Image (cartoon, rainbow over all chains, first blue to last red; front, side, top):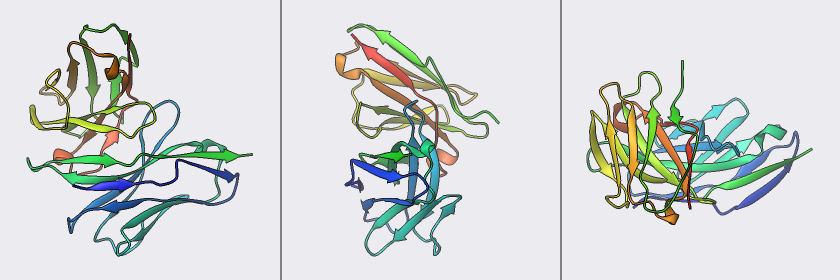
Length: 117
Length: 113
């Protein structure tokens, strides 16, 4: 079974600085997809960034980039120039194939990010 | 373009009661998945609906059931509520049975007293 591990329960970062949120994964599949979601206190899970296992380039979306190291099975999220609005829970996730042909998303335990002014 | 919508936003029930939660997927999406998120944890997969059928179920009892309508909207029903069912229930929509990125709704917070 696939597994996502986030070892940082909480992280602090100074406003305008960069921060890296760690994520490691375990899968025996050759083709897989990795995601990062942001969950503010309101509860909505907001999609941030996606990395496919065969993508040669690291994914970037604005201030978010995914540091994908396939051999190490890690998919760390880098947030540059942190803003106060970045304070939230961040989940690393993986797409897992269902035996019916569909897919579901499995999530790590999450990292709570606090941005200090 | 409306995103995923869910109703109600909050709900308070007592043990033994039944509850129905509703979800409308993002435009162009045909697949709806439901997740339960207990406090301080990541979401857990309940089940997925595609083409009006339950395609796969996670590790949840039969008290949890659902339905998908021809317009792709979906309902999650929970019978005989337990205190442990208190959680945030998230609906996610996607295209092609989840092969594309899942987009989540704002969730329904259920409190069972």
